[in-house]
Length: 221
Length: 376
Image (tube, rainbow over all chains, first blue to last red; front, top):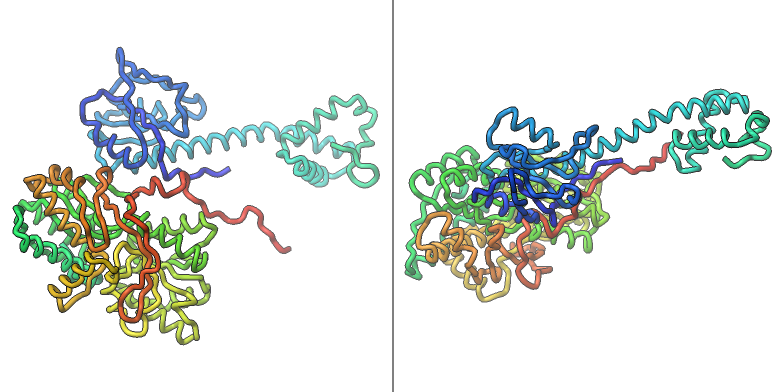
């Protein structure tokens, strides 16, 4: 699992949540040079009219003005603290409370207001790629957590084979590892399946010593 | 503002000549706009670029034609942004920039390095050895080159960087000859480049290698005045990707070459960057006339409407990026100090400074093979 570096933002869509004051031109024209279109969701009753659920991480980028308190409600993933799409904070008042709100949205990059054209590419590049990187790290973490939980099944399967076939620990582990590779599954998942098949089998108690993968008649696993 | 002394002075002097020719023609035309050039020389010293820019802008000069290296351009841009001046940057560069206070009349990366990759990969080979001067031009141009070549199945064997002005190439040349690439991609500038061409040709000759045919050197910078600097015996057989060669066979170029030679009999001869400087002043004059002021914003707005039949062909400025539409070409140097044009685009190509239209969405990654065979 590797994180790829996004370097071409063509066909991207920026949703800029800010009070329109006529000073957004620089951001919009610079984004256009980078192949990114700009939209400004209407703000009604202090809340941006935006359907967060319809956003697409491959296309959309949210630019959120940190000076607009509560203008957007983003459900960040409670574990990863990541929003559904990259968020870039527009920083006006450089106060800890405003910055904290942007961090809570999962902003991965910032742009000072008024926006300077020369800062947009860097901000976009960092914002999107940090978002991808953090998603990648989170996915890897989830995978490793799953495998950590699955280690119990590996230990149980190793003990099972040691008892059943009289193998030593290393031999039992190697056998399971080879079998998992043949099955194109990770070891933890394979061992869970291996054990559940043994538990489900009515023959298990009486055949505990008859299962062998070495020599003689090999049984499918 | 050209460094007419220092390590890349040969090209810079040709750029100054190109700009001055356009000033002369403007004066001879006796149009409504009278241009009075003020010439400054930063001598290749980055600090001087900034100081001179502030001096010019402080004196009320809001239109400056100049800079050759990207490091000097990046050094002065904050000055032009702060005082709202316009820098007319007349040289090819590595892209990924678009300041509102710069008009880019030289080639963007999609107009020089990408056509060169296409040519090299299809006609020369796919194993490259990259050398360059140690600053942003070579770093970024090599990155673009590497990604484009890798995407085509090729590979970059090595990248070597030397300080601007460095002329000690023994180790680099030994490495190249050990590796025997299909070609060398050169991003050295100025005196470093000239010394490299000479030393590489000589080292190949000692080993019985026909350098021009067996390990050609390809560049996006090499121009006619630099061939003269390289000197006898090592001039021919080098590939160059450029939007202009002085050998172009067209009436506008013939007129340009004749006028240039007459105005500057002592040289250096014209180059792509000289032509870009000539274009910059021509467009500046036309934009000033249309804008009716030298304020940066109206002039910038006016330049988007200009079209010019330049020595290289039609040139215009893209109103979104303020980079130029130019005609990419591939040339091969000959012993007479000229380039033979091998390939050229049928028409001017739109600038794509961020490679939005010309690069994959994700960066091409070069990883170690997933499967490793280990002998035990």
